Image: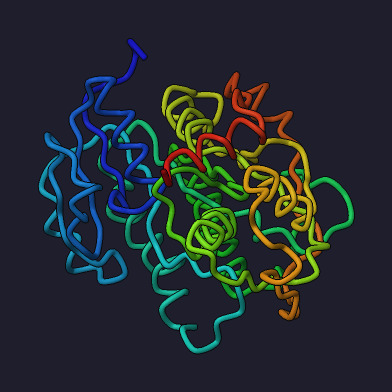
Amino acid sequence: MANLKKKLLVIGGTGFIGFNLLKKAKKLGLSLTSISLKKPEKKKYLTGVKYLKLDISKKKELKKIKNNFDYIVNAGGYGGLDNNFKNLKGIYSAQYTGVKNLASFFLNKNIRKFVQIGSSLEYASSSGINSENVKIKNPITIYGRAKLYSTNYLKFLYKIYDFPVVILRLYQVYGPIQKRNRIIPYIINSIIEKKNIYTTKGDQIRDFCYIDDVVDAIIKSLESKKSNGEIINIGLGKGYKVKNVLKKIFSFFPEYNIKKKVKKNIVSTQTKKLVPSIKKAKKILNWKPKINFDQGIKLTISSFK
């Protein structure tokens, strides 16, 4: 980390990924600024961080950014994972318009790196392992399409202007203080509060990567000149059926009545399988996950107690 300069701007610094990134960056001694739509909750407030409240989808509001920065990490935006047609405008504003505005604003600011947090949902339905080299035509979710449009726009800026951008396609990120509408905290919280769990049949296959490993990948991407212009998958590199994720979590709570409490009555409209190849991350970023799935689940459960 000795090569890192001081100033880091995190868009979405009050969210799950942004907060954990700021917490790690603070330990590394960087000068930190966060942009978000809301002020941070008390448990997510970090001393020494400058918090700016603004909407990146509104170009005029970016004038509130007065300082120069060495590194920009865009971890912000609406995080809806389904086909939420009711919030179509909100998804595209956050994930496409906002990204275009940010990139345009910093295009001539002589930044060292722009890290775009992409999504596994940019990939279309697949029965195999997701490779960054595959040509994607039509992601099945609105969120995935908006993310892909942003990726294509940023790749264009790199090609034409040598804009120093890297797109990190994250898979299922989990860990302490994550919102409880996400699958792993939802299950854990439902068990602890003795509530019913509503789920699909659980045949979808997903890759789950612990938050500390994801933050480590983001930090490494800031330092890597080799990553400019690249799309890089970030995940555990191993797929788990959702129903097996439930079984793993249930194994820590033998008193929970699975037969009575688990209701498999939700029809899934999501991609059947999303599992990444992480060879590129290993090669370019010299990164690989350190926390396996069992360890990550234990750490997440312990944060609830």
